[in-house]
Length: 320
Ligand SMILES: Cc1ncc(C[n+]2csc(CCOP(=O)(O)OP(=O)(O)O)c2C)c(N)n1
Ligand SMILES: [Mg+2]
Image (tube, rainbow, N blue to C red; front, side, top):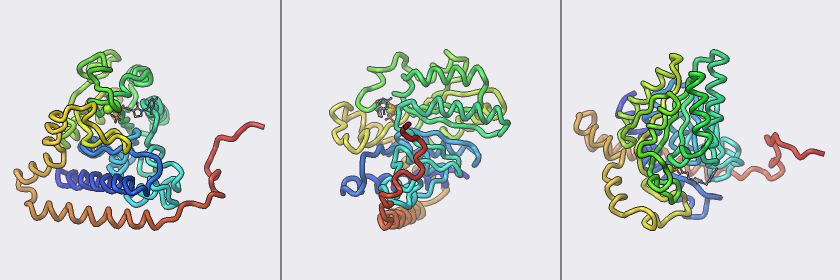
């Protein structure tokens, strides 16, 4: 795997999410959805550093993490649309979807809620001698939750095989990191718990892959966790109900980050290195678009599950 494969994967995530966005706008998807457009290099770079049996814990903004770990676009799309072909038969949706056979343990709608669960999975891997590494994605906002601090402490104390990967996109919903976070660099929070903290350009897929590979090696060899802070930006609103980003983000800031679109950067780098030419890269775009269009069509064709199956797979029951 190299830059060309990673580029294609980032294009896949972008086009998948553009399709999700369009379906919401047409009223074909229930609830809401959080797109990771602009943050694709984090998902692809980090997950590319993993082995297939390693595990990914994700957030409310998890389509990219899932696709990078091998999620099938049609089944994911069906899940988001609430259709029976979805991974949870349409009952989980965007924020409650998972597929352990590919090592994707799940998205999670609770800010910071996945961090202790991922730490527990890393403890299980170590205790059972399973050998796999866990990577836990979360946002800058989640790094202000108690769960982050408690988990980092225990993971470092017990030298657990986990990588904490914070996607610092500068905002938690509408609140900027400057207004909510006590440190300038979230990576420095690792030092408080005896864990290395590194900052990386989260728009550069190769740089993300490199630092994550180091952290994964360290985790797998028994040396404990690393806190990686990837500096990134979401190029759309927080969710489908946030269309006026200019109410809380300066237009100039958005423009500057848009010039650093990770797909644009990887495309330029591929051209400069002569790995492919413009025609070949346009063909990648066309092929991926055709695959996403087909996945979307099949997902829309899938029925909504019969209401009588609503309690199938529900494990919590009311006491008598
Ligand atoms: C415990 C909890 N508090 C609040 C929310 C509402 N909420 C959903 S996403 C979000 C912002 C999270 O920000 P961040 O961790 O930076 O992730 P990002 O959305 O930027 O990817 C909030 C506050 C929630 N889902 N869970
Ligand atoms: Mg954020």
